[in-house]
Image (cartoon, rainbow over all chains, first blue to last red; front, side, top):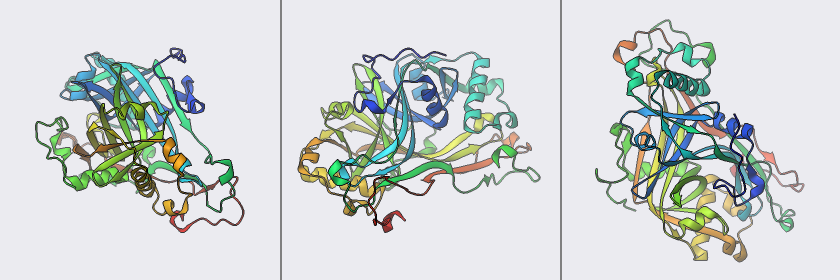
Length: 215
Length: 215
């Protein structure tokens, strides 16, 4: 569970605003666990593409899955260079000057090459890790995947080795001469949270209570 | 304000789950306006990178800005191929089967090449559009950018021409034989909303009230 040391020469060195850079493994894994999705970048015919996708984590391995006909996963399973970026937005930063407006956020960038996951047991464990990260308790409740469903699932793994995080938090950083301006400044914290209770499936059969892990 | 027609041969054609694909200009622009950030993909030395960045929109042009030393913006301003993806997470989709779990979301993918924005007036208008999109009313309140700050701002524009959206909404889609299972199924809506009130800057001078657009 040790990340490859990130040296100043690494491709993931944060070049700008180095004070926001974090290379600590625990911080990187915590951001990956909290972010619901990654944005994965890959190149096809010299064109970069960025596609959102749910991830799962076991140790220092990330997993992405989808249909066997998923174009991105098919390309990634060939071991091409990829990038996976997870971003959590923590709020707007309202400075006195337009120039110093910003956003509080935590993000992780991982570079590497993926490997196709073929072993059904590893696939199952990774699906469990993915679901339990998003909603702990759900895996034990849901109807488990069948062998056929596992075969229909294309999955790739990416080692969390060449990785870095970038974090901004706290109040705005205005120019010293602007602090006397009579302009409201501060933070507007934001978070991705349940907004509207639960929406039961219209075809839910009678007598099924909302499980505790969803309440 | 007309998007280039998206043909089935286009590189942004959504190949998988075409029922989720949207090529309607109004829908694409609405997603871009609601998403707080884009994840921008570019290639450097054969390695794809994906970096989160705030965007602004005027008509069918997207704007990205940062420091003159921002590595990604420097690369993009050379007109290399890029991808900008904006994703809004709308909730978890809890199916009866593990296999059919999903997420409700709206995302836009734009392919193209950026152009450096050099004209200070266009820069100013784009900064205003960026800020007003994130917090309407703020631009008129903040201390405007100086000529020097505009010079220190590296900005690129990207035409919203080769673009598509993908949307998933509504209840889970379980296999027909699973609908009788006594497993709770439905949606857990999520949204990115103010979570903790406003946090005033510790150096805010006395007597500055919270402006109406933040209340």
